[in-house]
Amino acid sequence: MFTPIPCIVTSSQYLRQLSLMYLRSRLPWLVAPLLLCSALSVWMSDVRWAVVGLMLLFIVIPMVLALAYINYALSAEARWSLLKKTLTLTNEGIALHFEDNLMHDRVIPWSDVTGVALGGDAFLVMLRVRRFTFVMIPFDAVEQASIPLHDFAQCLWHLAKKSA
Image (tube, rainbow, N blue to C red; front, top):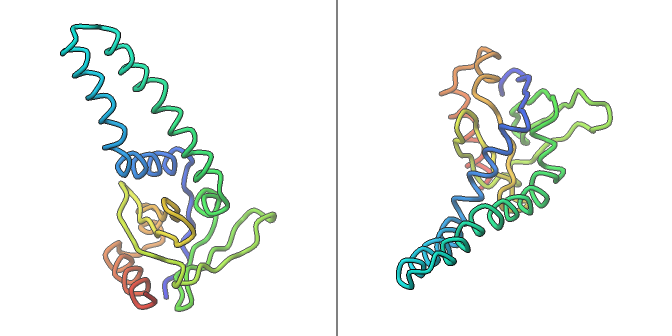
């Protein structure tokens, strides 16, 4: 459909997007204990509850993010976003041609795509594999390939919707 797009995503871009998605979905469960500890600290006039709340904030939440990193960012699908590749939209799916000889070229069929979202400065092609699994396509990579973002977004959305 489009010309091949050379695509590079840094690990910090990918991890930032993954963390935002993960924290947004878990926000009530992460904030509720902090609010409870704050309320108990004020109600009981006991600073120890505030210390427990700070321990939750600075120890428990980073450990939860570390588990999310192990579960999602170390998956094979995350490598699809992070390795240098050339990406092409076809009628069959998204064709990925990796520069690394250890990775085999791959076509992600449109039936494996659950949706398309915008994440900061990239398109996120959400995959059916598991929750929070996506392939990032940076806006600047699309623009460097001389493809208007609007046209690329329309084509990506149309192809993803057609298979659903």
